[in-house]
Image 1 (cartoon, rainbow over the protein chains, first blue to last red):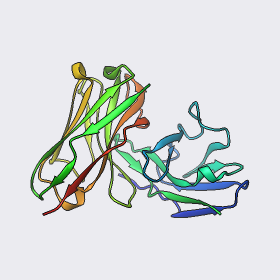
Image 2: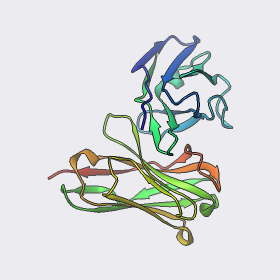
Image 3: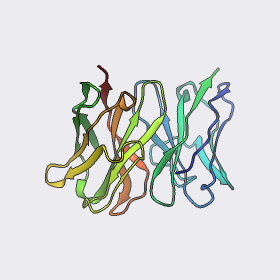
Length: 107
Length: 122
């Protein structure tokens, strides 16, 4: 199976825009998904199929894709957005792959 | 409201076995594939295994292939993970997760349980 690469950490001030990237060779052919995980809690899906937002997820969360990189963008970051974020995809054989996770710190 | 409640975790010695269960409610269980995802302490997420709605299609991560067996009982709205030959590196919080696709595998997860902790240590 292949790998998804994320930066270990991203820091941003409240109200600013946070961008978290995820790179993988199969991403041009496979959808990417994003999960938010706060300490002591289960992951929550925030973006599916590269750029779709589930119901109940704030509009400030968006996703985009370009070549082998997908990006989770959080506009107008709030303190409550501080969490670990994981990208996820699946390879052609159906094996699920997660990125290593990015810790978002709101300064 | 979708609920996934895992159970069966605990402390187990290396080489021994453990069976995890996940009780599902709030959706039509036999319409969806289900998965197990684990998270070692302080580490990231790792997909462990998935099973289609009718148990006709099953997949495993290479790290557990040959040692773990996933199954489901649609009559009981339950998902299981039989873990044999456990190793220290299997120590993790094990999450039950619902596939987002109805009748098909979409390979992503729209609902997660709170997890059950498995500790493998002598």
